[in-house]
Length: 571
Ligand SMILES: Cc1cc2nc3c(=O)[nH]c(=O)nc-3n(C[C@H](O)[C@H](O)[C@H](O)COP(=O)(O)OP(=O)(O)OC[C@H]3O[C@@H](n4cnc5c(N)ncnc54)[C@H](O)[C@@H]3O)c2cc1C
Image (cartoon, rainbow, N blue to C red; front, side, top):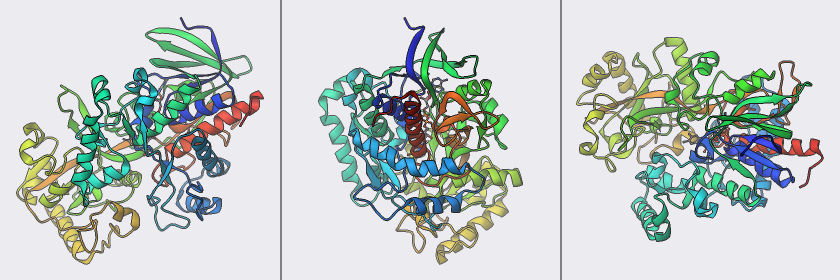
């Protein structure tokens, strides 16, 4: 039975921030406990794309990126005051974190992905890092199925794991995609020994590859991971130092002491409507979040506030457009589908309830969400907005969870989806009537898009006119891969919500990941990383992996600081 136990470090939350803190602390020789509220470990991180944004990483023999270029880029995009020391600490420590991770035996590779503000000074297209694949069964058969799984949409037919290269090949139906799909399916069924124990593909990819490979290192070091164990309160001594945590497991509460530090890495507050209402100018709804349902509720943020902690950058999420569909074969459950790349494909347009555009639809997903919020504050006519597309788009691209006809022909779309989750009509006018959009405005918007498709120039928002947009365009649409005329019946509309990948703000921390109080002094013994802490980037999402990159960096920094202060520093 647990109770009255003492560890050197208690890590709260088993996502990327917590996992890195635990691994690094263990390598400093510290005795670590990870507590995890959910019945599965790995957090949102394990369900994610697993991309880490690490500027100046110097992988592959190095390139000509530098600390200065990284800061030049960040300075050119960040629009609000941020803690300079913390921003610089990220730029300095992220490459060290990656190098350390690589040194533990985790395979890492550069993904060709333009920074999200392409063209800004210092931007590049080689700062996003992935763990290509990992054999999940290396975790052991008892743990392999207990790590959070990716969402169905991130797997082929909801079953076969895809790495990023395969995802893009299938998503764009690029040359040879059928062969790619056949290979994945064959590999899965040929793995007879795994088929006997689980439906889960042992070939972990994306977030599963990242988290699986880190946890295999964590388990090798004998770190204890305790699931179904929720942080309720922080324990402090008379001097205000955090000395441990009060947790609950299956209804029983007990205390675990932490001699050298508690690391809060329990994600953001996206599933807590009360905190959304308190912090966000346009709160949105918890159920539009694309993170694991009901997991990250900000309990640790509230517990830290009770011991004097302050918060920052809490007015926004890591936005991503989402749409909702019923979950197949599960009564009364819905699935949130990301539509990040769908909204910028050719033969479509996105409008607010006034029937007008408000953004370059092909921009980075966080920028898209920021534009939704700004437009809603201005017009009151957003959240949701509408993705309108024609039969050419429908044939080729997904619209959130509505897969292209090559995958889901019209006759396979469940009857109850039409007119409720997705809308279809033979004319734009009829479509507008069905979804209550002003026809005259939509008619003009569609006419504009059709005109821009001919010239390749979007004079309003510059859609398809930069490298990031074009990456998710369709090269067969010319002259602009993100623009095509919306002119082929039937026409469709799907409501798009302002979903999120987590929250941007959280506990205010310094460059050493120490949680700060209202006066800006560290709360002794208390650290935070990942979405539990305020982002170093303030209001922007610099590039693919810009939540997990800093999460792991500040998990690493926290462990180093704890080790240094406790006299246990090793590597
Ligand atoms: C589909 C998808 C794809 C994404 N792809 C990327 C990507 O490729 N790159 C990128 O940078 N970002 C991506 N994101 C965002 C990214 O996954 C998250 O921002 C990131 O994983 C947050 O990491 P974290 O460690 O802070 O929190 P999490 O990974 O969410 O982990 C927090 C953990 O804390 C636990 N917890 C919560 N409360 C308590 C409590 N009271 N006590 C104990 N435990 C608690 C939770 O159950 C959870 O397991 C994606 C998100 C989604 C949904």
